[in-house]
Length: 134
Image (cartoon, rainbow, N blue to C red; front, side, top):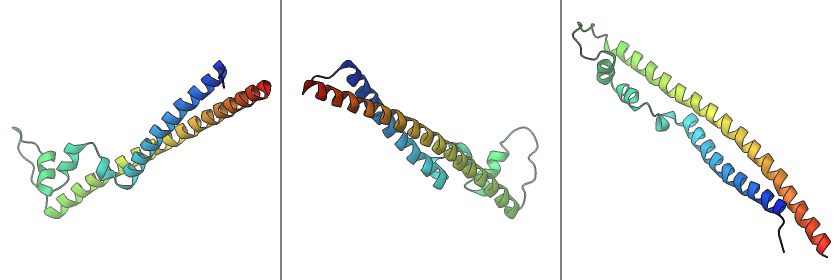
């Protein structure tokens, strides 16, 4: 069966849409991981390492310099500050994941709509072609 140029166009658009849908499904899956397990995807490694222990946090907050070092707060206060920063980092990563998931879903819907339109168009062209041949 000979294909028309319009049918080839419609099928080419369908191919591109399928490829884009597959990529967006991967992005959506990664966004879900960002939301549910932000510590696994956090790219701000230096800050994450600085919030793993009180000593690391204190060194990060007060790098060595010529200035007089401030008095180190109690371990309870230091732990509280460190965990607040860690929670902020994870919340920020989770929020970023929510935005990424929203974008991926919007893109998926757009590509699915374009795919559906072009798929129907290709099928209609195919049925018209077979009805004129018969």
